[in-house]
Image 1: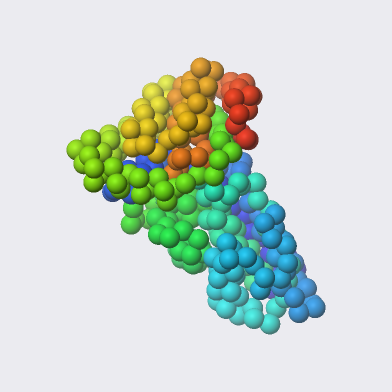
Image 2: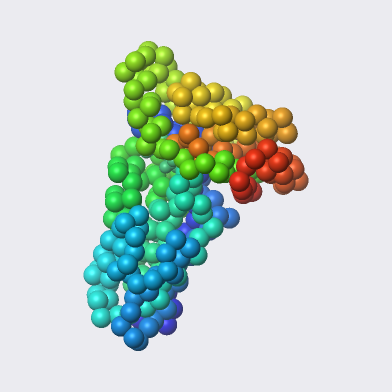
Length: 310
Ligand code: PMV
């Protein structure tokens, strides 16, 4: 056992393909290394296992219901690594906002698994990492597609099809992403149900939207690879319009997309489940990104993040 265990991970963002991915179309998710999470484990000798985080500070046994997935994962890791006689302080430092479609629970799961394996100096391959992280995600999300954990553990963009492990895809893009939080918690489950109802009410129109999102995702993959930034911008905005047709956007997301387009963005869209949560815009330079971030804050965004895409 080491004197200190450290595990790191980061946020994810869905570039394109949310909602249509539920119906078998591909999605592309990007890691956001600038929005990071770190778990640190330090030994204690007094028989306590303490958790320190912005949501909870106290004994492992007192974790709130909301963190039941985390508690279950920690117990699974302790059993797996034969650590039932060990005591520690476990600190979770996270830059990720919860419930904003940035994969905060999956990032915590990945960082926890890595920290425990580092503490006990045991080798960890990607398959085992994702299998253990799923212990938490299955409790926190009703039916996780695995996209969040796969991207929180990946350093490359992922091409993701439901039911399959993601495939890393090449990206050669000179652009910066400006992400903005509406300040409203996203309502992924409600939005997914709304699309389901829409499919029953107007199947032809709704299938056409989902197919179009699939086509736009394929076009986005080729634009990513060929550094066609302007083209990618247009594809992203077109995807936002399809998501509006699916009724998963809202007034605030639409307003921030409009502000982005009026302030030099090449494209912008909501990301994740929608109905709150985050949007992002694409610009070419970091100076443009800073200008746009300020404009989004003036328009009421709670917080912004800049992520260069390379
Ligand atoms: O809100 P997020 O980041 O968890 O993304 C949800 C993505 C959906 O396609 C709407 C749902 C899903 O399970 O893929």
